[in-house]
Length: 494
Image 1 (cartoon, rainbow, N blue to C red):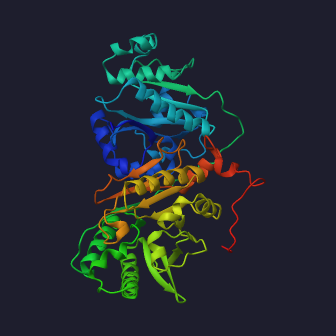
Image 2: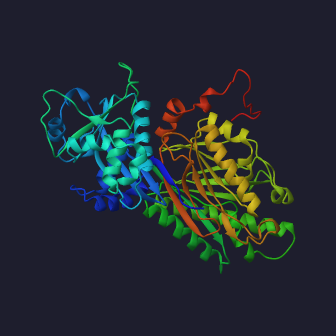
Image 3: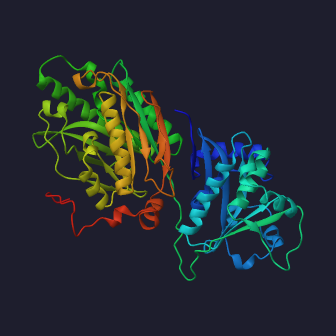
């Protein structure tokens, strides 16, 4: 499949590509990571890009201004000579693009127009008045570009002029004012939102991205338990070094040690499993505390009040543990006399409300809907896919759950041989999926691993964007559900 251009918000992970683009554009002000991250914190809606095969083709950085103060070109040049996000006015009514950068190799007219369209959507959603941008082009040349028919766009070989033509086609026009100083070097273009409504303020909340890491684990042979733990420690330290607050491992991670179990009947297998569970629980709590990161692991077999359960567990950086028992049992669990769970657990953390979903449970939309209704914002789903069919099921329903409930859904799978009949040739394509709406990628993919390769994927998620999507999205399906006609009833108290 050929890469396609994606029109979306900028993410923290885009910084190196953003800096490279700034170098190609020869932006006069050096791009620092702190300024870049601050722009995502203070005003994420104004940081828009077009990405092609993980490289940025076009990027806008902007902040809010009060339009009443800026009536002519020199007003902008006077107040914003540098273009720092610290000049952002939280209660501003218009957007000022202080940095725009493009890649000459990949930019085309359609790309420029679509990216501008994304920014205009943000303006309309936030009920803002205008967009302003400064271009280094004489007004006379802008008039010439405006007169070029779209059928003759091919005659423009310069990518900057293609971008300027796109601006004009998207109804950006020179800022006209009787007292404006004629400036043949810098011109302010303005786009007016004719749907702007006076006296209606839409809150623009602070953006606090939370980085998470998903491990696509390789169940390759290990010499002993210590080697297994060393491999897990490596992934946890890697995630922590990238400032992740959360790391997700696949289902049945502890069974990586099955090759070292003593041969015997089922009772011997369960005895070995429970022994490993105790060690994993102890060691992962210590790793979570040491690296100050929450660690989610699936497929942990526990013995609770003389009954066996298979659970996903969260080992928290503060030393606490959380457990979610599997609600719907697969063939493997049924063969081990596992007892199905009957309660759902929404875990409150300082950065988000989490819910652990055990593999197969993801295929049941009622489970995820009930978790979402009870406040879950990020679904963590360790899974084990024994073949390509199972993998396709997991990925398809995970994307659907994210759209249905307007939440984040992260899934971690493993590859290799788990030495169980059902999992001798495991398939994986780990992911972080988002709702499909204005603030996210059009395909709903925040991050996705190459299938059947040992790797990790990372992504930054923000709960404020979920709230905005549920309230102001193109669709508001989560809140529009007809509870007067149907609802999800859970017979066990949550």
